[in-house]
Image (cartoon, rainbow, N blue to C red; front, side):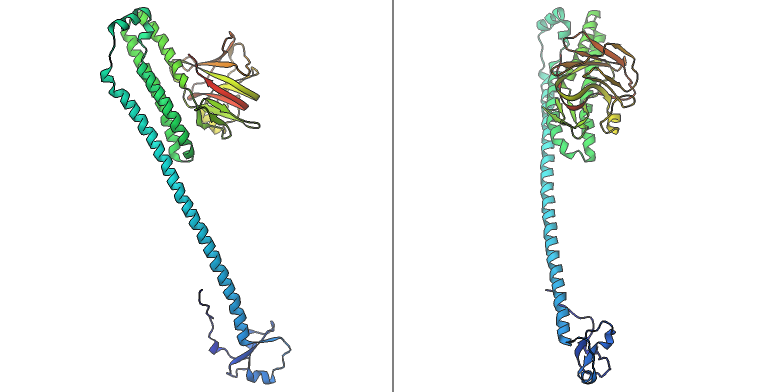
Length: 388
């Protein structure tokens, strides 16, 4: 308990009539100034005040009792606040520990990722082939000669590790480093496409005309195979949209609508194919491609002129960023349909078709920015369908 001390010196108090006697009584009259309220014994002999009075020591006791209550209240409040703040500190320390554990898990995923790739690298000095088997492939099926199972193995490792890494990374999406990690993951995908292109170009230059045709066809097959690993982005999407099945399924409920972009950018060269399987449509569903950054700036909502996307709705309605110059017939789709989308940046077009149908729709596209596969849905569920 803190010691309570009066500011004034009691010994210097003087009565209303300056008798220089000890103060005995206080007049409780609000109209009197302070120096007229104090009375000594001599004052009491002739003072005839009708106001209420109280003994001087009793007044001091009342005042000090009230101040002690205030001090006790302050001390209790301080203790409660310190206890709460200490609890906050403890929680922050626990949060720090949990974050460190999550970061350690991310580091372990990346280290395992590196080790798995390095294991493949260390096996290259043991890479052998059979002349007669390869000769047989060259004669019977030239494109099979170009098959590179090691590259496919690397793609599978990357896809598996990316999925694990992405799921752990989502809790850090408010940190500046999150976007950088997402960009690196996207670059890993594009680097693989570039390596495949270089590999194919070298083989084309070294082969005869027949092998050139086969290799060119295989390049397209590799692009298609690349998009077997297409995934929805956990980051580039409307906040209310849910991603599951390792990035393969997008879902939103009643009253929720918005875009979900895919993680992989559409390459600048060649032709790519990808497909969306329609699992549920309780409101509306649109599939196509879009400018990721523009759609992000619009809050992952809005379609049509100037909105940055090229979309086909299940009712066959189209929404294009620019130009309605189309070929073919606008197609509709429903639950269980598989919508196949073909895109060529070089030839500036997108084509929609349905599996097991001859109908298609083609339109010209703007290629001034990077384009990404995407869906724009309301109360619907869509799955990325692997195609060959």
